[in-house]
Length: 68
Image (cartoon, rainbow, N blue to C red; front, side):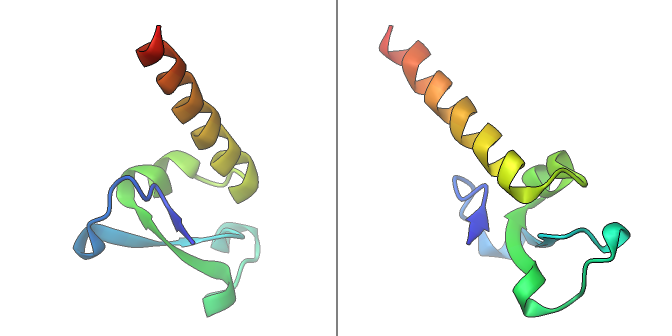
């Protein structure tokens, strides 16, 4: 899964941890995803599912504004 997939530049991807290292997350592949720097930084220690839902809602709201 790639967060922020609207920025599809694999050379600029960062490693984001689904469970942050600061909250006892591991450096295992099961806990790591590719994310653009902006999304990785904006998420901070927010649960990944909450952040993903916020991104989806922001995208849906953007589409509604453009349609109006």
